[in-house]
Image (cartoon, rainbow, N blue to C red; front, side, top):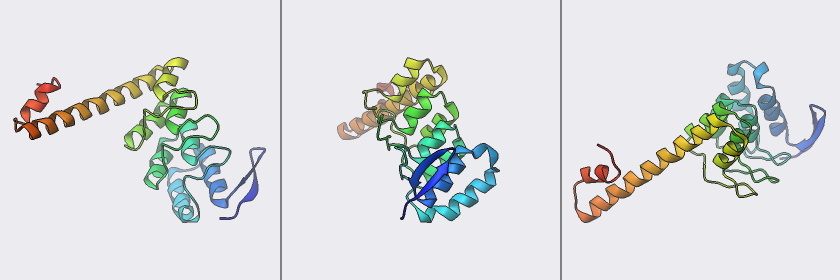
Length: 180
């Protein structure tokens, strides 16, 4: 895909038409009717890479900055990866939402089931570390709850596998992790 220069908000970007249009949608989403997002996105998605980075950020990262949960859902459904980090800081859209206090974006990323909450940025910090450091309590709580849910699910799965291997009843797996 051929790149061209685009002046967006006073900054010149060298990117594809696909990225430029979708970037404008993400950046100025509050001016667009929700139905228009899907129509434009559907028309443009075959034209480019949904994970293209311009200035080190993906469209999903930009959607997280703008707290656009609807667009996050569509981008992830279209194949956008929440695990792609910026070139400069190593932060993912999850890190971005956590550090900038965007709980709607963070909830949408978590709900996608594709967000990797344990990834660390270039300074060795997880999204939870960043949310706690800057005092974003709501985001820190969302991340803590999801990490606990994942840990509980893994423990339950491990206990069930162990019960199946040893021939014990599956119910004992629930008792191992403290469920009634």
